[in-house]
Image 1: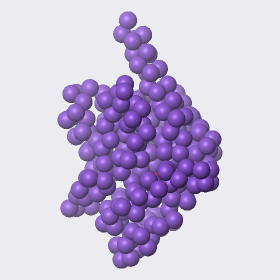
Image 2 (image 1 turned 90 degrees about the vertical axis):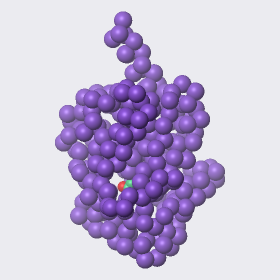
Image 3 (image 1 turned 180 degrees about the vertical axis):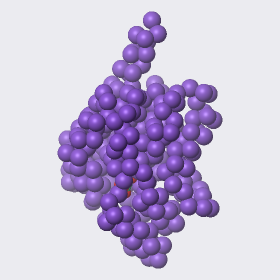
Image 4 (image 1 turned 45 degrees about the vertical axis):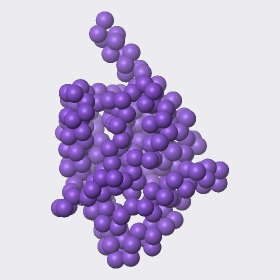
Length: 253
Ligand code: MLT
């Protein structure tokens, strides 16, 4: 079962191209994180470990005790780091997309808390219009209007309370930069060469510290590789997953 975790402040629709392509061969599940898409926000504040527990509940419910392939973009990646550190034995492989293992600096944390307060007071439109220009590269903004409008629809359709809670949860997230050096699961890291939020040099550095991890760089993309470069993204993911499967057959035979 392939589980795809969306980024902030998005929902399962960021994976539409992957659902269409990969569902032909894989059991693809696209859970929505608390408060996003059709998922309800919890009554009490949550943290990344609660979201990792949510993923584990999905696995227990749908994977019939099997291991999963877990893929997360950005905030979904933060959940995937947490899941991998808590539930490593339930992972067959890990795909970390446009994300980072580090916790926030004090300044970044304060920025998130400010945004949480501002969005609660002023609403999503006032605070988050224009966010797509940070998430997408210039080529996408110029030449892929469908991707731009879908991304904006997701951002502007998100709920203020959910955005605020997610920012507070991300502000408190753990730092996995040491933990990843002990990861023992086949890992693919996907980066966009023009990602303004997760710069490529930094991604190369941490990806190199995960034992055996493969790094795939998509030149024609920013922070949203699955939407900006879906064909190349899907090929990279398929190649990785199929090598995993043939590796297993070799081991089985
Ligand atoms: C995301 O795409 O999920 C966000 O960029 C995560 C973040 O704000 O760190």
